[in-house]
Image (cartoon, rainbow, N blue to C red; front, side, top):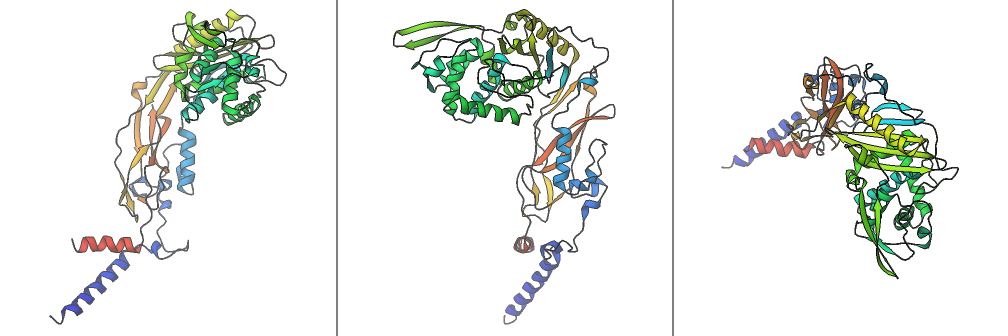
Length: 454
């Protein structure tokens, strides 16, 4: 019995030395020159513990040239956000439609691919197509819960004084946000636009500053807004391409806009000092009655801008945007847009991978956890304009066998690669779903003891 303390001390000493020599040198050496294996030099993915150590099998993105995982992540992200096929790759056998407008763009919405365009970057007056940006800011505010559809908006003297297209709101009249959105979408109401601008930002001037800021965020390089409704003024300009960009942002980020842009006829109630009166709304977008796939979006016309239209349509799960600027006649903007949309739908097909299958956790070396869960960063979409057989698309998953801690949630872990006839179409990123800190001496000691005394 007397030898028991000696035996216990000897046992703990043995455990201590076993733990010490089982811990990687990186735990003890903070200097970059510490004798720790540099696995990034590996060229065989099967032996790599870091994604940047894998030699990339595609010439489009060379991960093996990345100096660290973050740069590898940027390389993959730049190549795989959404596969965008330029207009120059459209099937040469396709016959372009006849369009009378001097400026136009045809865009596929999910990828942002430009299918057809003419003088699309010229600076031109936009008329009421301006209201697409006004609506985008309104729906952004709704999404951020800064306002609700049922909030009451009091119309100011200034808002009530707006000329042009309007629903004849009176100063002091109160309408809900939902009603004012409907007035903007259906009747292109200038007074409703200004009322909402003041409600959101206190003044139209402040709201216009936010419009220009949002335009800059979207890469709308030709655009300068001066007002929120599109009334003619010398410095109020945009381009067909910029209109397509903000239209795409609105319909993809806030698809509920179509609940309003597809209304053909409706009514609102004016409640004023004179009592209640009904006012009829009729949609200015006649394409809704001329083309069965039309879903919106916004018309515009002034003496300077002539006749403009940002038309959206959906068919077989594909959504297209046709922007017409400066058409000489009102009816021509609708026929031009219809011709572009029909051309686009006859030309394109979409492949999407939206599967949310469960990914197996990735083993972790030297971490507080022994594995890390994985998620897909987003869905994958590929737009085909070559009439290819998309059922032959193949996909393979590229992941390291394990990852060395520390691991940051959201960083790139690997990707799914999509190929057709040996050609890479794009990638779907796989990211880490949680942080995994690097293990310390105490973690290794506890882990060893739990195994030793199990």
